[in-house]
Image (tube, rainbow, N blue to C red; front, side):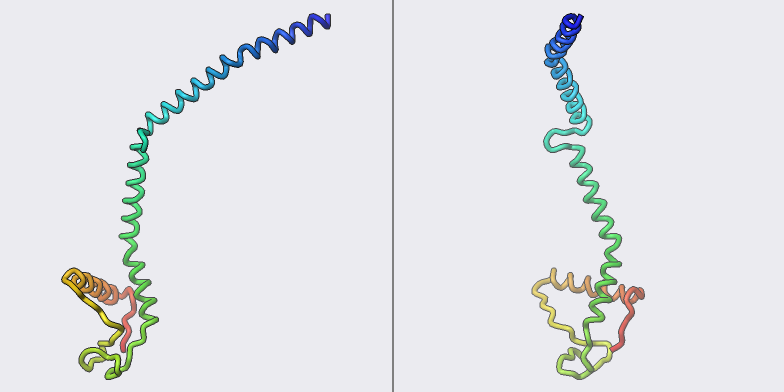
Length: 141
């Protein structure tokens, strides 16, 4: 009887081994079909059209977030810079302009063209708005 049991097991093992190729082929077919379905759903055409759209939306969202919080960053920067700049006394050697307690010299501004001048004007306007809106405490000289 042990010979018959051995023959059954040998037959079972032989049958499994001969079917491995079919099992492997079926698994590969399933994986290929799943991959092709995912590529089709995601619009992957190297590069993926879907991921291009997602990346664009991420960038646009980041830009909007940065723009919406720019005032906070400007306020914090102005506040920090305000603590670093010490205004000279009126009439001091660094003083620029007429004798007024509201003016002081913090450096030289070089404006070489109309675009530079416009940028400085816009920055000064923004800085004044920040101070005027109470986002940065104004300092008297």
